[in-house]
Length: 371
Image (cartoon, rainbow, N blue to C red):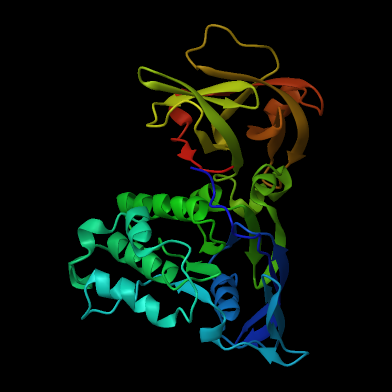
């Protein structure tokens, strides 16, 4: 299924300045429709920005425009009340009503519709978030992941034009995080609902983000298309040397025994078998530390993934290691090597390099339902 149709593109413009105790915020960015991820360490200003967009925090100076509507303009005197901004917010804590069961918690959103129609019906929302087994339960009988799915459903049924997710996976274990991630994937693609996603997890951002805003100490360090930022060796330090790597888009080309093959820019990548038919569009992340480089095509290796690439950039990092950007058709890979290895291999722009990626190094690819 592709993205929902009949929903016009939306944009978000944010320009905020203010002081909050010892913390100073000075940010400006704009982004088209899709999932906008605000990424940075604790204290970078992510939650302050999200609360300001939702109208839950006052700023001294700023302008916020969502879908062409000016929600805040301190110069012009505009300041739309939070309940009139039509923005759904999901906090780290689910904040469900303890005396209501799940059905009643979901239906509570209808009180705030004001004549609007949700992107998805009640039944569609329950199906999307896999809530059917939970409908008669009360919050005390739900796991952390289940509570968050209900909170997302309630926000969705309020017919928001924008959904703000304030680190919704914090404190959840691996299995529950996976449940929420899959739900957010489906929400982004099937409901075509614009989202602002706050996180300090590279893996979350790699999966969900269309636009990435990198924050540090209350300022925007960089913003742009997520795939371009991940493939930029100059920005690897902001993501963390161990987490740096490219995000690739591909298509399932075959499923054989325990292997799924993904076509990426005309090249085949093999990974563990997926429950996805031929032609399914997927997204996968490959860490720079998992890519080995050679300047001659290797033979006699157990590695199944040997890709012919062209060196794009060679960037020496302050820690002495070297980040190498590689062209793979229209896609980009990153590799992290030692300075000694870069010199020995004579890595230079426009030279051929073979990228070797172990089958076991590749995580599962995530299905994306995009047109």
